[in-house]
Image 1: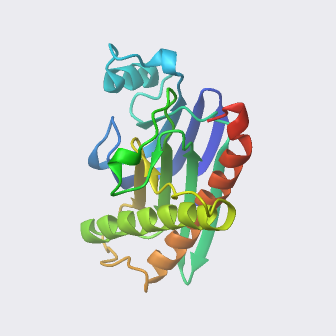
Image 2: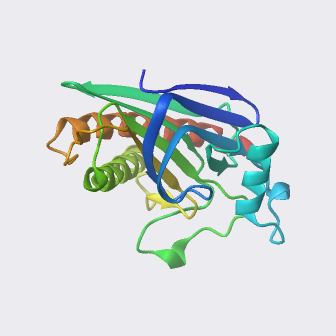
Length: 223
């Protein structure tokens, strides 16, 4: 295992045995950082009205639950609906843990077509590999994870909802890339590398499973 995880509503927590280098646009640790935990917090619309600072809110909740140093993510998806996939190519092992809700989904390039819904979904994905990546490779890995997530969504819509314009993401998504700290760093993580292959397959599998389940439960508004 690259990381382990557990959930106890309203928290889903992934933990690494050693501190990792991470890259994300999370509210609590945007950009590059070092961390060994990523924590998802399940929230409701009533938790985050327009008068509440979302960054301050999640940090206060992390502190309150002794997770103050963790990289924090928020989701309105019921936290028990999380999805995990692992793939390997050569010596590279990749894992993805994701939560997905599409109630504020959009198709990139068509902002005027966004849905006007009162509920807000999001896609939050932790994408980790067992090899050290340099800065460029981590940025490239983020692009691979984004491709894989988006293609999984588009494949679902093409197969199951061909009459609809596919959702390519939501307005509140976050991807976290994690790799071990090390003296020797892999320089590239594109689609022709073992890192890109393993990571892309893991993210695709977890995202497609999550998208499929969300559409099955959407009638009950389990976002």
